[in-house]
Image (cartoon, rainbow, N blue to C red; front, side):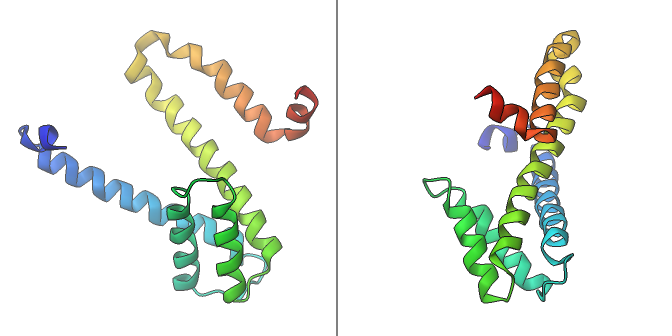
Length: 140
């Protein structure tokens, strides 16, 4: 960060990156919120924002289960069924991975040049795994 800030225009670029990252997190929370409240769960935006961002922070706790448990417990506290929280958590992961893959495909040619086409099969396999999880189960 110090090197980037020391370059001409570096502070402006770092500030723009910070704003873009914050906007991305807010948009992620809003899309996840739709998954939670679309079925009629009685949750305010402030409640779902708290649940979402605590869940994001829980990713840094060792172990894979803590994010789901945090969502379930916090959701129960505001009247959201555990099943809905688990479903929203899983669908949120799928949406995030799909969005990341799409963004990666868009920037791959700029980063890797003409060799970017080698990533297309990987993305297709990942998309197939998301679209048809039963196929993955049969392979493993």
